[in-house]
Length: 346
Image (cartoon, rainbow, N blue to C red; front, side):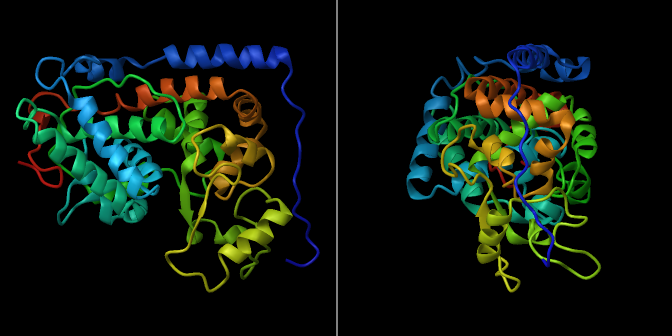
């Protein structure tokens, strides 16, 4: 990379007044919800299956526990699966459909975790094996519960999940690319996409914290590591990167990297759901430009600093944002169904 120096930059920690203001912003953000989302989520309830399938949470949790004992990959994969489902046509398990127009064969969804898909299949089988629950619980709700359980079982917060979603009847691969954030998105692009789903900048930063147990393939950040034709390393590929970390990542992702090569998004505690992701950004060790921009852009830096210093605040904001995310595009009436098999419509 020649004589160009890419080094860590620092920002003073937020003052107590700034932290108080940010804490207030988190509370306000968690209470805010657009009218459309409220109408769509009117059918959701934490006790939705109290009489029809009272053991649903225990059954799903058991499947999650068993799968995580086999492979950690299912944890970040399941959380990502839930996010991708909700951002494309709403939280309706359309991402699970398999067919000529299925979503998980398009754009970013081509790298969705097979382990995560297997986890949902197992959880669905476990729920339907219970005589009281058979064909009464949607795949969308099972996915929402599984996302909560992988978070809590890797060290994150345990929270109540609203239930009552129906499964969508349509999957459209054509909309996937335009519905999900790109690895090179800047703050304005991120805010615009999240706002379209009723989510604030604080929600976006909190949900990005899910990357604390996330992974990414080399092709998503290789342009940040090497000089390519017409540009130097990092030029046009987002904010600068810590030089020592850059050298480490070049070993993980050499120029002739394997298509399956990947790296953990949290260089601090990659297998624990905590606030280490934000500390990674403070150290200029964010792999994706769309992650590092949260610290490099002054409009979002204070929130990153706040979450890096206060894990409880991060957890509270994450739980609030997950609740709002889970209300996006909820299907009602004839627009949805309870699939007998998660990979195909009835």
